[in-house]
Length: 310
Image (cartoon, rainbow, N blue to C red; front, side):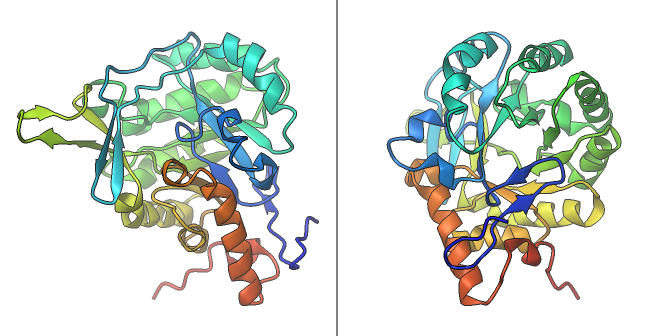
């Protein structure tokens, strides 16, 4: 048991993966992890979820690709990335030197590409799990993605689970009528866990030019603005599923993270906060520890799902 000097056990067991603590970095906000080595000790994290990988290199969307908004950030990066071959040859060997879990966010233009990415990475060492990104809203027109339908979610998750030699975490979209229905489809298809929420489909307008502020017109809204909705969705899904839930959406502090844990999340991902404070994820780990110590909580897992609902 990994007990800190303050006596708080932060270890987190997802069933298929044991983490040093419940704090992961969210894909797309932390690069490949190595970019943050000058700012923090990556070993302090529960794990790193690297930015989304397609099979081949991807340029992403035309600029502008980032817009600040009230209490949030809209991004339309378009999943720019180096592709699986460069990742496996140049990035993964360096990540293997770091004593923390590495989770690869898997992307695809179609089901075949998702499967090809997983097939290629299956033989590479140093990967703890795959996060199946079926929910990014800033790639296709008006945010279309597999996670908008229970049927397409089920079919893709089932195919990737059959192809994967590692646990699969399915990352869900909030841009749906019933996120529980989508989550249940992923669970039925065999996912080992679900992660939610990805960003909300959004846009921004330049009033002077009367043009969209993003080159892609639409983007994904993240940051504190989405936290109350994300928290509600995590609670709803965690209340209905048997597989672990990883929560995210506007987590800026340890208190934010603890609210997600109390609502039923087994672990959390920190995203937009890393743009504001490169050390945010490690700081949030320390704040969780301090909160537990101050209240006599011996193990962080003891507060998971303890919300009191009338």
